[in-house]
Amino acid sequence: MLVLAALFAVCQLAGVTGRDTPDSKNYLSYALSLRGDGKRAAASVTIDYVCAGRGSIAARQQGVDVTRFREPSPRARVVAACRAKEWRGVEARLRGGQVGGRTVPFASARFMRIFEARPGYPAYLVPFLAVFGVTWGVWAASVCVAVLGGVLVFLILRTLRAPSVACLTGQGLYYVLPVGTTAMRPMAEGLMLALTLAALWGCALVVERGRVGAGVGLIGCALAALFAVKHSQALFLAVCLAVAATGCCFLRPRRGVGAIAGVSFGGVLGVVLLARVLHFPSASESVQDLLTGHFAYPDRARPWGELLRLEGRFWVEWLRRQLWEPLLLVSVAAGVWGVGRRRGFGVFAVAVACTGVLTQAGHPDIGIWGGRLVVLVWVLPVVGVPLLLERAGWVPGPSGEVTSVEGRARGRAACGGGRFGAGVPLGAAQPLGAAQPFAAEADRAAPPEAVRVITRPGDQQ
Image (tube, rainbow, N blue to C red):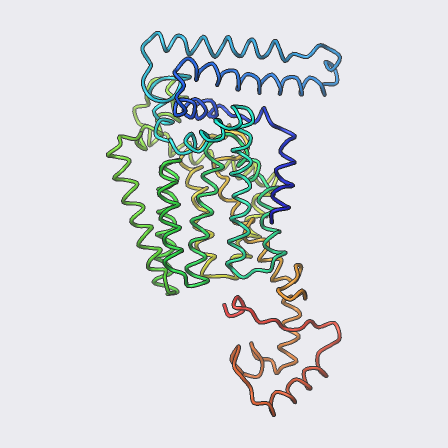
């Protein structure tokens, strides 16, 4: 686990700068403000960081351009133009009196209020900035939170009693699939992913291990921290977990599921009340932000009707693009198949993935790169594919043997055709006199290539 995490961290040295997004400068300026920097000092450091990244990207792109690679590097020119543009906007807003809040006024006050309501990721950045400086601090913070996400996937699969190879497979998938790339971006999504996985781990502890107190406590802490990172995501997660737990209570009762439902409904209520008390931007404000290009145009008179029209067109285009490159759809299907073998846990894994769909539905902008809004859907293949591979016999079992559906079927047929063999319940003791002929008959009936049946708690489902 640690070797895989270290290897991932070393690979990230390939891109120390140039990972920032349009949102990164807002989060970074917030973090610098928490560190104690004034508006102009925070603006200077943030603009230097952002423009250095743009200059690096421009230089790399020209270096491989077949017609312009012979020309001098454009880095200095791009950095200078970027600084002039950013300072021009910041200076104009500062002179206009936009000096409130923690963030540097890179946009209108109405738009910046959205980031003022997200102190979690900036607070996470502060110690890294203090120790490593801005460039390496932002990179180190991204590496740590991305590594943490992979470790949490490992722990989730371990809680499900998956073999070590399956756990490492899940951790590796987290790093190599788009979810790992998104987690490395200097924005709130990496921390949001880690906290969501922590909540999913809590669900696994409850339904698979019966550790209700630890699991529910972990879910509650994850929801509370997620509220500080992105309160809308905390609301989506709480709603999805509440629906999943309620469904389990009625359809497939399990010990501790009621506690998950309780903490989830409490999370829904807490997020709604706190957001109102703290005067966070409402859902209507978010819709206006979407439809007016971050408030660059006048507010729409009927925003919800226009949003519904946009939703229909967005999902048709989104599906067309996914069918064109169906990696996500195929991966999610495999993930659902994998977690479906663990029905108690699988319901909550699907619920977590649904938060990604809700996030994308709340902001149906086809122009946002990388699918970062729907990134939580990738949790399903990250967790489910290793379980599917284990079930199919493509990863070693707990004692080193490969267990497969075919092998288990052969073993059961050799033992009398019952699910667990001759009508004997799983784990039940057999009289010595009956067990020996039974075993001898199985040895004669089973072909040489049949694998030994390995009973695990997961086989009971």
